[in-house]
Length: 245
Image (cartoon, rainbow, N blue to C red):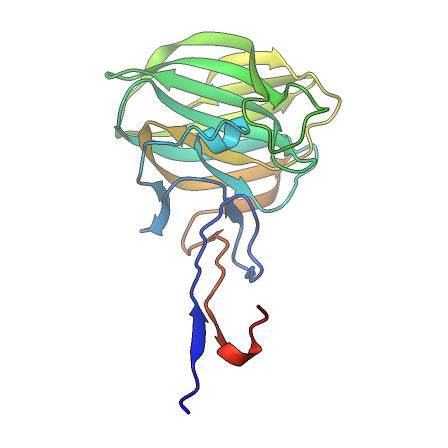
Protein backbone atom coordinates (compact mmCIF):
# COMPACT_ATOMS: atom_id res chain seq x y z
CA UNK A 1 0.00 0.00 0.00
CA UNK A 2 1.29 3.37 -0.94
CA UNK A 3 2.36 5.35 2.13
CA UNK A 4 0.45 8.59 2.62
CA UNK A 5 1.99 11.68 4.02
CA UNK A 6 0.54 14.71 5.64
CA UNK A 7 2.41 17.80 4.58
CA UNK A 8 2.22 20.83 6.85
CA UNK A 9 3.44 23.92 5.09
CA UNK A 10 2.74 26.81 7.44
CA UNK A 11 4.88 29.89 6.92
CA UNK A 12 4.43 32.78 9.34
CA UNK A 13 6.07 36.16 8.96
CA UNK A 14 5.71 37.40 12.51
CA UNK A 15 7.59 40.58 13.35
CA UNK A 16 7.09 40.49 17.09
CA UNK A 17 9.02 37.25 17.82
CA UNK A 18 12.73 36.86 16.95
CA UNK A 19 13.98 34.23 14.50
CA UNK A 20 15.31 30.90 15.66
CA UNK A 21 17.98 31.13 12.92
CA UNK A 22 19.54 34.51 13.61
CA UNK A 23 22.71 35.16 11.62
CA UNK A 24 25.70 37.28 12.60
CA UNK A 25 24.84 39.98 10.07
CA UNK A 26 21.33 40.43 11.42
CA UNK A 27 21.02 43.70 13.35
CA UNK A 28 17.30 44.50 13.18
CA UNK A 29 14.05 42.81 14.09
CA UNK A 30 11.13 43.55 11.82
CA UNK A 31 8.17 44.34 14.05
CA UNK A 32 5.76 45.29 11.28
CA UNK A 33 5.65 46.61 7.73
CA UNK A 34 7.18 45.48 4.45
CA UNK A 35 10.92 46.21 4.58
CA UNK A 36 13.38 45.56 1.76
CA UNK A 37 17.15 46.03 1.70
CA UNK A 38 18.40 47.04 -1.75
CA UNK A 39 21.09 49.36 -3.06
CA UNK A 40 22.47 49.98 0.45
CA UNK A 41 19.16 51.23 1.86
CA UNK A 42 16.44 49.70 4.02
CA UNK A 43 13.12 50.73 2.52
CA UNK A 44 9.61 50.43 3.89
CA UNK A 45 7.58 50.02 0.71
CA UNK A 46 4.03 49.44 1.94
CA UNK A 47 3.36 52.80 3.58
CA UNK A 48 -0.04 51.87 4.97
CA UNK A 49 -0.36 50.30 8.41
CA UNK A 50 -2.71 48.08 10.38
CA UNK A 51 -4.16 49.41 13.64
CA UNK A 52 -3.43 46.39 15.84
CA UNK A 53 -3.87 48.57 18.96
CA UNK A 54 -1.80 46.42 21.29
CA UNK A 55 1.10 48.86 21.59
CA UNK A 56 2.21 51.92 19.65
CA UNK A 57 5.22 50.47 17.84
CA UNK A 58 3.18 47.82 16.08
CA UNK A 59 0.69 50.43 14.86
CA UNK A 60 3.59 51.76 12.75
CA UNK A 61 5.86 50.01 10.26
CA UNK A 62 8.76 49.39 12.63
CA UNK A 63 12.31 48.07 12.81
CA UNK A 64 13.98 47.56 16.20
CA UNK A 65 17.61 46.78 16.93
CA UNK A 66 18.09 43.21 18.06
CA UNK A 67 20.23 44.31 21.00
CA UNK A 68 19.69 46.68 23.90
CA UNK A 69 22.05 49.64 24.25
CA UNK A 70 22.87 51.36 27.53
CA UNK A 71 23.15 55.11 28.10
CA UNK A 72 24.47 55.91 24.61
CA UNK A 73 24.99 59.59 23.85
CA UNK A 74 23.64 59.90 20.31
CA UNK A 75 21.88 58.18 17.42
CA UNK A 76 22.24 59.39 13.83
CA UNK A 77 19.77 58.38 11.14
CA UNK A 78 20.28 59.21 7.47
CA UNK A 79 16.92 58.71 5.81
CA UNK A 80 14.59 59.84 3.07
CA UNK A 81 10.83 60.16 3.44
CA UNK A 82 10.38 59.11 -0.14
CA UNK A 83 6.65 59.40 -0.71
CA UNK A 84 3.43 60.26 1.05
CA UNK A 85 0.86 57.46 0.86
CA UNK A 86 -1.88 59.29 2.73
CA UNK A 87 -2.23 61.94 5.44
CA UNK A 88 -1.26 62.51 8.16
CA UNK A 89 2.31 61.43 7.46
CA UNK A 90 4.43 60.24 10.39
CA UNK A 91 7.94 59.03 11.12
CA UNK A 92 9.08 58.03 14.58
CA UNK A 93 12.54 57.56 16.14
CA UNK A 94 12.00 55.29 19.16
CA UNK A 95 14.59 55.15 21.94
CA UNK A 96 14.81 53.29 25.26
CA UNK A 97 12.36 50.63 24.05
CA UNK A 98 12.05 48.02 26.79
CA UNK A 99 9.88 44.96 27.22
CA UNK A 100 8.26 43.01 30.01
CA UNK A 101 6.56 40.84 27.42
CA UNK A 102 6.12 42.93 24.27
CA UNK A 103 7.49 46.37 23.47
CA UNK A 104 5.03 48.64 25.26
CA UNK A 105 7.44 50.94 27.09
CA UNK A 106 9.16 53.50 24.90
CA UNK A 107 10.04 57.12 24.24
CA UNK A 108 10.29 58.58 20.76
CA UNK A 109 10.59 61.69 18.66
CA UNK A 110 7.66 61.78 16.24
CA UNK A 111 7.61 63.99 13.14
CA UNK A 112 4.31 64.57 11.37
CA UNK A 113 3.02 66.29 8.27
CA UNK A 114 0.43 66.52 5.54
CA UNK A 115 0.11 66.41 1.77
CA UNK A 116 2.82 69.00 1.20
CA UNK A 117 5.55 68.33 3.76
CA UNK A 118 6.32 67.46 7.39
CA UNK A 119 6.32 70.40 9.77
CA UNK A 120 5.91 69.31 13.40
CA UNK A 121 8.02 67.38 15.93
CA UNK A 122 6.97 65.94 19.29
CA UNK A 123 8.61 63.95 22.06
CA UNK A 124 6.28 61.19 23.25
CA UNK A 125 6.05 58.47 25.88
CA UNK A 126 4.03 55.26 25.49
CA UNK A 127 3.31 52.36 27.85
CA UNK A 128 0.51 50.13 29.07
CA UNK A 129 -2.35 52.02 30.68
CA UNK A 130 -3.47 49.31 33.12
CA UNK A 131 -0.62 46.98 34.04
CA UNK A 132 -2.93 44.59 35.87
CA UNK A 133 -4.47 43.54 32.54
CA UNK A 134 -2.93 40.80 30.34
CA UNK A 135 -0.35 41.89 27.79
CA UNK A 136 -2.61 40.77 24.95
CA UNK A 137 -5.32 43.27 25.92
CA UNK A 138 -6.25 45.56 23.05
CA UNK A 139 -6.55 49.33 23.49
CA UNK A 140 -4.56 49.26 26.73
CA UNK A 141 -1.68 51.48 25.62
CA UNK A 142 -1.46 55.24 25.98
CA UNK A 143 0.62 57.81 24.11
CA UNK A 144 1.52 60.98 25.98
CA UNK A 145 3.07 64.02 24.31
CA UNK A 146 5.78 65.47 26.54
CA UNK A 147 6.99 68.33 24.32
CA UNK A 148 6.47 69.65 20.79
CA UNK A 149 7.71 72.24 18.29
CA UNK A 150 6.98 73.49 14.78
CA UNK A 151 9.81 73.01 12.29
CA UNK A 152 11.37 76.20 10.95
CA UNK A 153 12.47 74.36 7.83
CA UNK A 154 9.87 71.83 6.80
CA UNK A 155 10.89 68.34 5.69
CA UNK A 156 10.31 67.83 1.98
CA UNK A 157 9.36 64.45 0.56
CA UNK A 158 11.93 62.57 -1.51
CA UNK A 159 14.90 64.36 0.08
CA UNK A 160 17.61 62.88 2.34
CA UNK A 161 18.01 64.37 5.83
CA UNK A 162 20.16 63.58 8.83
CA UNK A 163 18.25 63.15 12.09
CA UNK A 164 20.17 63.08 15.37
CA UNK A 165 18.82 62.12 18.79
CA UNK A 166 21.28 63.38 21.38
CA UNK A 167 21.33 62.89 25.15
CA UNK A 168 22.74 66.04 26.70
CA UNK A 169 22.83 66.03 30.49
CA UNK A 170 19.27 65.31 31.64
CA UNK A 171 17.75 66.37 28.29
CA UNK A 172 17.10 64.54 25.04
CA UNK A 173 17.44 66.68 21.92
CA UNK A 174 16.36 66.26 18.28
CA UNK A 175 18.49 67.79 15.52
CA UNK A 176 17.66 67.74 11.81
CA UNK A 177 20.55 68.51 9.46
CA UNK A 178 22.41 70.02 12.41
CA UNK A 179 19.57 72.36 13.42
CA UNK A 180 18.26 71.99 16.96
CA UNK A 181 14.54 71.26 16.68
CA UNK A 182 13.29 70.16 20.08
CA UNK A 183 14.73 69.61 23.56
CA UNK A 184 12.94 67.97 26.49
CA UNK A 185 13.87 66.56 29.91
CA UNK A 186 14.27 62.80 29.73
CA UNK A 187 11.97 61.44 32.46
CA UNK A 188 14.12 58.51 33.59
CA UNK A 189 17.59 58.23 35.10
CA UNK A 190 18.77 55.90 32.30
CA UNK A 191 17.83 55.39 28.66
CA UNK A 192 18.63 51.72 28.23
CA UNK A 193 16.85 49.58 25.66
CA UNK A 194 16.43 49.05 21.95
CA UNK A 195 16.48 51.71 19.25
CA UNK A 196 14.08 51.82 16.32
CA UNK A 197 12.80 53.35 13.11
CA UNK A 198 9.07 53.65 12.48
CA UNK A 199 6.84 55.13 9.79
CA UNK A 200 3.17 55.45 8.96
CA UNK A 201 1.47 56.61 5.76
CA UNK A 202 4.83 57.16 4.03
CA UNK A 203 7.47 55.13 2.22
CA UNK A 204 10.91 55.70 3.74
CA UNK A 205 14.45 54.71 2.75
CA UNK A 206 17.10 54.49 5.49
CA UNK A 207 20.71 54.88 4.34
CA UNK A 208 22.54 54.59 7.64
CA UNK A 209 22.10 54.37 11.42
CA UNK A 210 24.93 55.02 13.90
CA UNK A 211 24.79 54.83 17.72
CA UNK A 212 27.62 56.36 19.73
CA UNK A 213 28.91 56.61 23.26
CA UNK A 214 30.84 59.86 23.01
CA UNK A 215 33.14 59.40 20.01
CA UNK A 216 32.96 55.60 20.15
CA UNK A 217 30.69 53.88 17.65
CA UNK A 218 28.79 51.04 19.37
CA UNK A 219 26.40 50.26 16.50
CA UNK A 220 26.53 51.01 12.79
CA UNK A 221 24.54 49.80 9.81
CA UNK A 222 24.84 51.14 6.26
CA UNK A 223 22.62 48.35 4.87
CA UNK A 224 25.21 47.02 2.46
CA UNK A 225 23.69 43.62 3.24
CA UNK A 226 20.28 42.51 4.42
CA UNK A 227 20.54 42.96 8.18
CA UNK A 228 16.80 42.56 8.88
CA UNK A 229 15.35 39.25 9.97
CA UNK A 230 11.86 37.88 10.16
CA UNK A 231 10.61 34.77 11.93
CA UNK A 232 9.86 31.95 9.48
CA UNK A 233 8.43 28.56 10.43
CA UNK A 234 9.31 26.17 7.61
CA UNK A 235 7.41 23.17 6.26
CA UNK A 236 7.70 19.77 7.90
CA UNK A 237 6.67 16.40 6.43
CA UNK A 238 5.17 13.86 8.82
CA UNK A 239 4.15 10.29 7.79
CA UNK A 240 0.41 9.79 8.34
CA UNK A 241 0.97 6.85 10.67
CA UNK A 242 3.07 8.99 13.01
CA UNK A 243 0.46 11.68 13.56
CA UNK A 244 -1.32 11.46 16.91
CA UNK A 245 -5.06 11.82 16.58
